[in-house]
Image 1 (cartoon, helix red, strand yellow):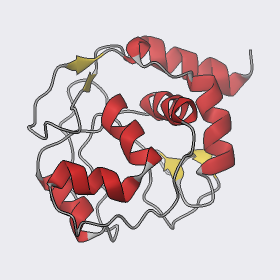
Image 2 (tube, rainbow, N blue to C red):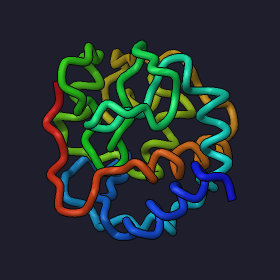
Image 3 (cartoon, rainbow, N blue to C red):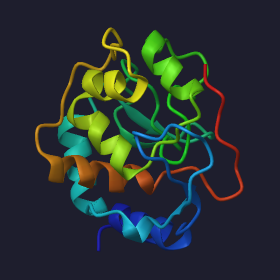
Length: 170
């Protein structure tokens, strides 16, 4: 097993139940715990899809500054601890007003709402907020739902640890 895939497997085994879930259609905070093993995607395949589809805009960089995925891109926000956290939680990032409103609604990123967002960011925000004028700054769309689920499973390996409070946004 490759060292990176081995590390992903270890993280996934240590964090089951550590994340908070939230459905895109129900933006109330405080969903049920998410079992990472229950993510329907394949984290190893998601790592490959992240490298193909996400790295030109996103990075996964921990608090120590170590880049765990990506190439230190800064067009999009750092995706470290995105899963289980509120949208628009990265301090200082210039999110769209709609994404800020979505984060302020109390929703937390989980598999279903993240996959829906990856497939069509603007449509997801419009439906979640009930606002036909809402727009996402993310123009890229993952075209295959299976690949979006794989990316979500991969990002879950870097998710918010148990006991940590979701960020309030930036």
